[in-house]
Length: 292
Image: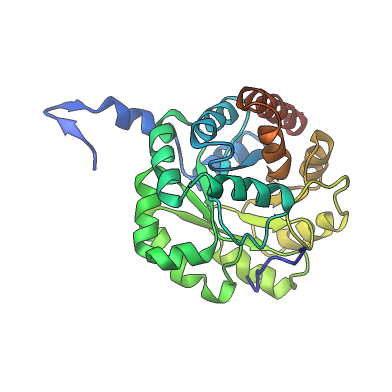
């Protein structure tokens, strides 16, 4: 069913010897610092999305490493959820497969804790609001921060309720990225832009995620409108599936290109080894397209 997303939505030291692992963890920077570094280098960010646990968590961990080595500047990691209202059929199917294997939030966080020290690209967790409320907002935020997650996207978090998540997140060091729908008014865009942390996520279509052959030209107009009310980085996602589309989004002035279903589909096709090879090549092609 296609519906519009809801947008109305310690240092460890033994004596004087530092822990080597803590030094590795410093490779991963914050979302904001990553965007600043890219801006200073006149670069557009590439943000791939994958679903945790599809086909299994071992493959997800390897996928995160491959994406990090293949041009990803940040990585969006989806927590499998039973009622993913903003996700199209490809990501819904991936989430269903992961859930059927018993993958839950704690499993995802355990995997991230192991792999995050090896990554340079900040991990942005994509999850719905209900699991956060069930666990308790501060408890949830502390847990994800402790394993190395740097950002958070909650697609069904209404702007009117965002403060309850934004304030504790800022204290803990998690940047909550808010979404702008293509139908949002200028006033609402300005309010969302003011609240959003790290960057602003512009949804390119009215509807759910999924591969599309064309990017709507109105995205260019919305980007220009957003530039009049904010100087925060803007990432565009939903529907981008080809290097040419990524190049177009960059040309229209986006600071980041977010690609989801096209990565999820490639990772699911064939054996895990084939899927990992495919997403590595695809990631390189996308980064090349927006680096030119």
